[in-house]
Image 1 (cartoon, rainbow, N blue to C red):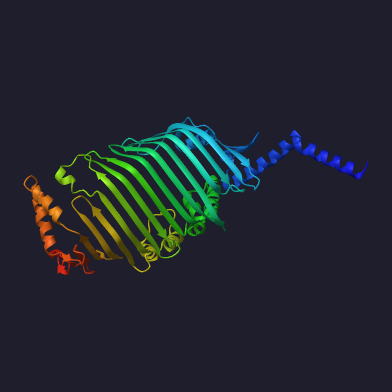
Image 2 (image 1 turned 30 degrees about the vertical axis):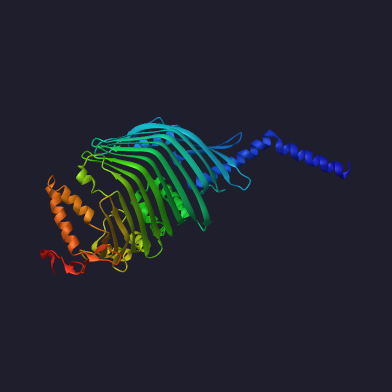
Length: 482
């Protein structure tokens, strides 16, 4: 047999072995075991919880099954009773780069109750359709990308004194991760909810559409997972929570910073709020919150805009016209060090009574949280618009720890009070209270300052001693004068 024939024969033999059913099955079993090992590292179940996750080969990948009915049966020991749960299955498909494609399609319908000293909590949850798709990194520690869609959600909660009912027509969530390094990552998550309806006792809230995006920079995902695994191991050994927390004090303490920056933006469309005495509508609500520098003195920037308010015809026209159509808020709060306060708190707290600090501990925690004893607030803009007025405010406030009042410097400016005064006077005969409002509006106009553009303004100031001045005139109430 020449060399060429020997080579061809060897290749053919290896190909036959690698493609044989027994070899393929053996390879898939090894991969399934590897997946199970990775899951066990994240969820180190043992004893009765061992096997809640199990992995098995299927034709086009691997099924990871979470045994929900078994978990609920184990929870009967702490007073939970539930029925209707089915195992949850995720299909994993290995990708050439070692990542895994994960697909899931489920329905959910579960009801039950939890025994409580003040009376049972009954619950019912249903999702008619849940579909999700994700790409997980090779060790299954985080998802590179993910998207899920839920339709026809229902959640009911009932206690002897309270009931709540929440539904949504559709809810989609997408997320992506980046900048993964040294156990940290950046996370972006976007949620869109359609047809949201909440009712709690006699109060209700309906929203046609809610969209929100949250960006977390430098999330310590691995430290969180390791802390969870360490806690779970001790909990399964029967160790009480306070003892577990004490043994993991340093790990909890060093979780902060949970991020270097957190951004939250969102919009709610056509919100309707129902109260027993009054209903109220808002056409749109937009917000943009940025929490910067969580590793040092941090700043919280807040922007909020409410448009198209609607009193649903429940107010007299003379009063309804006074409700602002648009409210705009743009402000920032600084001087807070959450990281140092967190680390001090968890270095000194007694976990048996975690919310009880002595006077010394409270003062120390406050000094770490507000190291300069001052919380500065900058109001870039606070604006109220209606058909009768347009009022803008801007300035600064300083909250000093221990003082009863903030130090305030605020300018209030408007193009004119005349439309508002005319409205008050027009309706004063029917509504005497509006006549009083007209008097005070005329008085305010009388001592207003005049800006270069013809607008009028009032400079409000509250000094550290509590004295109130308006355009330099003392308006301090007699009983609060220093």
